[in-house]
Image 1 (cartoon, rainbow, N blue to C red):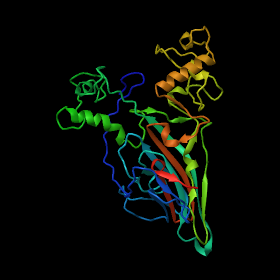
Image 2 (cartoon, rainbow, N blue to C red):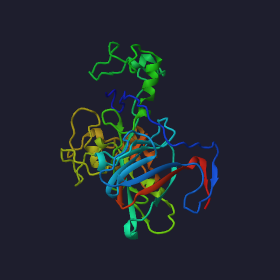
Image 3 (cartoon, one colour):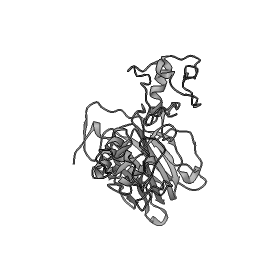
Image 4 (cartoon, one colour):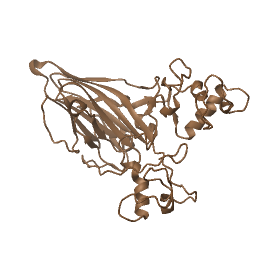
Length: 371
């Protein structure tokens, strides 16, 4: 339901999330040191990744602190953070990897930054052959809450604003529309609270409701592009895998990537994964329906100097950034979940005989790590 050029209203229902894994964090940072098993001491969340043989069955209801993947083969595991969510514990949303049910295993983390460690456990395979796993990180999708709440311009979000929402998507915005968002038969403050909290209940981006930042440039990369763990005889110690969560690159709305791989507008909107001046001259900025990438329209002369140059491109990027459509982290690595309100990060997880991998998440805002 588009309300303006950059404002989109989300009326997604807020689902009830099952809370698992009991962890209490102190208000002040906790000084911790590394234990002999490689893990730091201190408050943390646990995620156990179990390798299972074909035909294994289990309770598929959300909950617990475990996900299940094949003992041999590749599966996708997704980790999700929503900055507007009230989830306070690690929450397993989907226990099974895609090799079992066609969908990735999904785990939601409470908002915040973590230091992350992993170790491979359980016995080695038969004949003492080493078991191993490899994590390959990827950015699946990212989006911001594009909801505009002050619709009548009075600076107060109340029931009057609800009457300006086209909740049934028929293109009509009027008092005869139905802003009874919680379905209790009346329109009151409870519907306003529902509206304000709707984004916090999301665990994936939906193009029809959110402002997507789903395109990541070909230059985007994690500081660590993979991590292997091997289980042999003897003690298994944890490895710091935090660098697999540190990302640098450019995230921007996919609708802006109009120029083709050869750098020119081809009329079909074939993306090349980058924003360039060719994308600027391929964009219908004034909304008149005319876009011509060969004869540069005057609307793209943003600084009014009678030419379209790098200076205009820089102005355009600034406008996009202000509108939340463009975020530049090139050369400035950040915690991957910080690039948007909702981020889905994933692992392509290759398992070669591992029965158990333990991953721990230590919140950096409550933990001081000692070398």
